[in-house]
Every structure is written in structure tokens, then in C-alpha cells.
Length: 389
Image 1 (tube, one colour):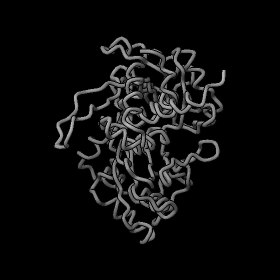
Image 2 (cartoon, helix red, strand yellow):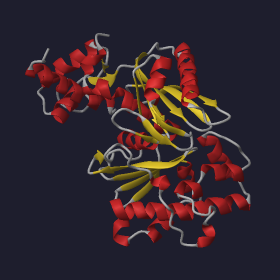
Image 3 (cartoon, helix red, strand yellow):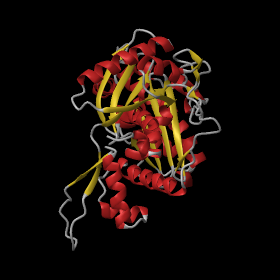
């Protein structure tokens, strides 16, 4: 049955209001009225419908100096959530992420070798069950988002190539859906991290953004141009790690003809501090607390190469902000502002004017929140798809 035009308008308005609530800040009804351009009575009816669907709650208005009755604030319902999963070469992480874009619970399981798609799906299913058993709020789990370190086709989530996992042309969302029993979608992990940082983290409010992510499977990223994420024709944009790095000193090269992620490498940093594997905080702490000259030499070598790659991105995209996640954030933190100065020295002077280089604000949660955005997209597009609470 074809929906009536009024139904379509109502759904669009519901979507607009839920999106604003989801973005955070607990907007008041008055603020929603101003942001949407809708009248007060329409906003009241939309908020009431979202509340009946169990998607938002209204709270007591904050104190205000404004004349008149204070407007109630609208917050995401605390029990609406999705599952996020991030399969990597050394670990699989699964989390419950709420409609408030916060990680409510997470669990990580180390793996001895890169898992096959079936193995990864089995572990994800086990971790989802573990989180559900621990979930005191009994969240309404609406779907599952996968942050995959590889080229993921935007149309259907097919993993075309994940070189470090040794996956090629894997319909991974289908494999996980069969194992977990939830609607499942997938995207490139770094692209999803870029979206999360742009919406909720260090890139919030920025129209022109370059994001690079450093993880166990290498370096990827994302770009926002004029307030729109740059996806490419099929969703493969942002593969910064596969570019050939520029070296100002040939002695800095550690591989015969490696790409950027071969030279600027988490595995090399782990080796310098004597670790086989570690989560991001552990690696950061070991690096920053080390007094070993060999550690300093390797970090500074990677800084020099990363700086040229970032300068190239600055020259091409002229962003307002560059955001670095994962171990790249540690390279930024090391002897700060050493990396920023190296980037500036390698950039076209006018292109670098006003550019800020920042660490990802969402820390370890950035990829999980990005995957959650993917899983929440159907709900945010049509809040009525949730059904009655």
C-alpha cells in the first residue's frame, strides 16, 4: 500500500526530531521548534509520538532566566540500543551502544591469529550473548553494526578485501546475521570512526575534516567535505594507508617498497616496547612512559613519515581540522607539538593556515560508535519502524 503524502511528511518530521535528540545535548521543545522551523504544537505532537514509540523521554526543564514556562528537555530512551562489533587481526571487540551514542558495555576477546569470517561470527555471537546476560537495563537491541578493517562495499556490506584478515569477497553481514539473529550491516572501520568523530567527537561542528585511524590492521580514514562524508563511488574512499609514503630522508624507510601503513605501524611500536598485543590505552602508556632511546627513535621516525602523509591530505583537502585516532593519536601526543610542526613544515603554507590537528575525542569507542550509527540508520530514517514500545 502506498503511504499518503501526510504520512511521509510526518515520518520525515519524526526523523528530523529524533536525529536532533540523538545528536545530543537534550534539546528542549523550544530548541527543537527553532532548529526544525516547525510550530510548537507540531513539535509537541512529534515528541509525544516518539515517546509512545519508546524512543525518547521528557525530563524536567533546566533552570532558565527566560521569561515564561520552561520547556521540557527531550532525551533518547535509555533502553534503545544496537550492538557494535569490530573484528581485528588480534582481537574482537563487541559493545552495546545506546541511542545516546554512548557505549553502555563492551567486551574484548584476544585471538591468537586473524580469524576466518566464520570464526569471527561465532566469537561475535558468543560476546553478544555475554553482554546481553550482563545488561541490567534489558536493552531493546534493534540491530548490529560491523566495523571491518578492509574495503567494504557500501551497497550491501560485502567485504571486498580485508588484506590483514585475509578476507576477500565475503558477505560478512549475512554470516553474522545467521550467527546472531539480528539485522546486520557493515562498513569500513576507519570510515565509521571518521563519522563518529565528526558527529560526536573532535570533529563536531566542522564542515571540512580529515580523519586518519591507526589500528592493528593498518591505517584508514575518512574525509568530510562541505559537511558531507566523502564515500567514493562504492564506499571505498579513505584508504590512506595504501598510499606510497613520501620520505624526506631515505634513511627513514623501514621496508623496501612499503605503503604508508607498512612504515607507520602499530606492530613496529608494539615490538619496540616488547609487547605482542595490547589494547590502545596499554600501548599508549607503554610508549609514553618509556625512556628507551630505541622507542624514541622509532616513534620519531614514524612521526616524520606520517607528517608528510598528513601534509599531502592538507594540501589536497584544505580541511579545518585533522583528527587522529588509535596509535596515531599517540604519535600526536609524543613530544607535542612535534608532529603538528612537522605537518606544517611539509604543507603548503596557505593550505595549513587555520588547520587544527587533534586526537580523537572518543578514544577506544570511536569505531564502535561509528558502527552503531550504521545500525541505527534505519531507525533514524523512519522512527515508526521501531513499533510500539
